[in-house]
Length: 142
Image (cartoon, rainbow, N blue to C red; front, side, top):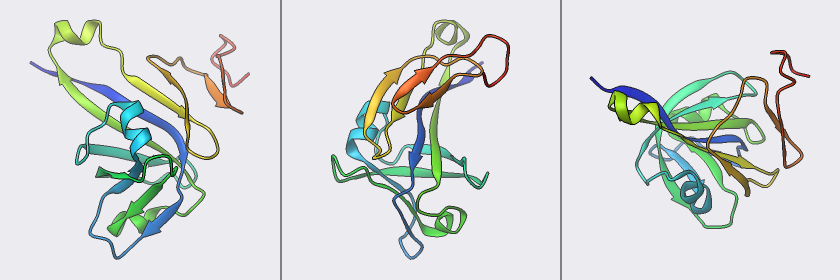
């Protein structure tokens, strides 16, 4: 048996462009791919925090240091420049591997520059202004 676990997450990156006529994929700044440990052509799940849309695709590398987060092809109809996107990839692990597993969680600034890479998150945690704001412990948004 294998358990599907979060491998990596890029948290609330700003969509910089959409390209409807491109063949497909999500173009991500190569620095974001490296920070998250993502490979080009790796399957991803993207969630648009702004619109609520969710879609699967794969990622390709954009220019390093550019902050590029460009949604291509049909998925370009689901997002708009400026929307906040969560990009996730998953892996399959044995139960023993899963017990100690920690994903890479990449937090970005307003220009999509990685400012923090962590291996955990708690319910209620928020990332604002380049800082992780821990949960208030009460399950609320504090």
